[in-house]
Length: 84
Image (cartoon, rainbow, N blue to C red; front, top):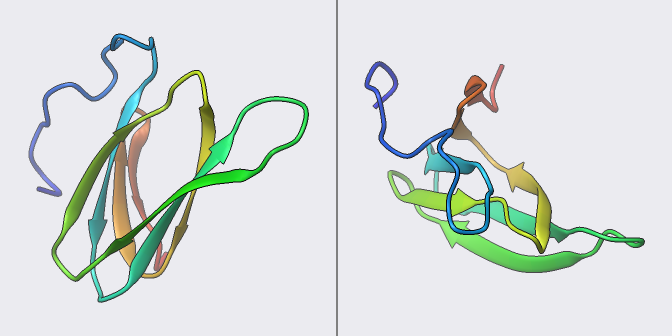
């Protein structure tokens, strides 16, 4: 998937948020959604096994995402490898 185009990334969805994709390169990668508003808080957590892919979207409730572990993150702004 590193060299392939992926549909939907960068397009505006129902909540007018950008999509992003996280692909786990090891067992136990954690993806944490952080809230918008006066206080930033954790509101959602996903654990990914090696090879699993999470497709997610920034929404009215999610303003940031934290990724723990070795993963590749695909966004409309580019591809980020957490090991680099």
